[in-house]
Amino acid sequence: MSAKLIKGTEIREKILEEITKEVAEIKEKHGVVPGLVTILVGENPASISYVTLKIKTAHRVGFTEIQDTQSEDISEPDLLALIDKYNNDDSINGILVQLPLPKHIDEKKVLNAIDPDKDVDGFHPVNVGRLMIGGNEVKFPPCTPAGIQEMIVRAGVETSGAEVVVVGRSNIVGKPIANMMLQKGPGANSTVTIVHTRTKDLAGHCKRADILIVAAGVPGLVKPEWIKPGSCVIDVGVNRIGMNEKTGKAILRGDVDFDAAKEIAGSITPVPGGVGPMTITMLMRNTLKSLKFKLGA
Ligand code: NAD
Image (tube, rainbow, N blue to C red; front, side, top):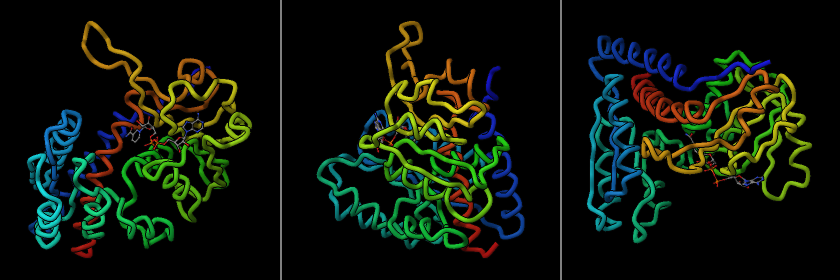
């Protein structure tokens, strides 16, 4: 039997429509729309393409978008002053600094300079703390984990009491999604295990998972025999395994052996087209939330 495919591309469309509708309602009632600034330093081609997609999506949902491109040799004090300017700009609800930054700039210092109430990426220590506390304290859940949780919920997968196993303990995916799934509340209430490179019995833990979330960055790490029949498998991994000579595009694979896994799992995300499209979508949602917090809406 083939698993139900959880398609990020389809869920993205629904959420972006919901956001667009809400932006129009807020505009009518309050006369404002969410404002997002994307700060890009230098000309890293991957960063340019991510930022371009973010701008396009922001325009699509009706936000005001400022693209602030700075030269590679901007000094750290000048970049910090720029962030301060947007921190104090009332029309801006979300500030996004595209990473990586040039080597002469301390990334941590820059990210920590963003007003936590405009930190729509959710990486500021204040927002990490808010996420840890959970409940109403949470303002901006980090975008990829928020997208993962949204996919699980929209796929109708029961999370309460479920055994969730997260492969990977990074600050941007593994740790936050594990923290979110164990919180008290809808789409959570799970029993969570995090496994990583030092875990003794990776396969044994994965085999117990009702919901298996894999964010290791190792193509095909999770073998089909590690998957509990009928479980939900979320493959966060995006690995370039070669180049399609005809299209010139990278061939992408996840961390799970998809073709075999889909015959065992109850539901599964594909790569590409699974978790990937959710990240920018949740960035838009966080920016809208930021304006709503400000308006008390
Ligand atoms: P990372 O390298 O920071 O962390 C990987 C984690 O996996 C580490 O904690 C490590 O301990 C664990 N790990 C690595 N190899 C392992 C192994 N053999 N056994 C057990 N654990 C192992 O990576 P990250 O930033 O969390 O990203 C993980 C993957 O998710 C990457 O492929 C990345 O491209 C992808 N990703 C996708 C999105 C998206 O789709 N929007 C967003 C972020 C990351």
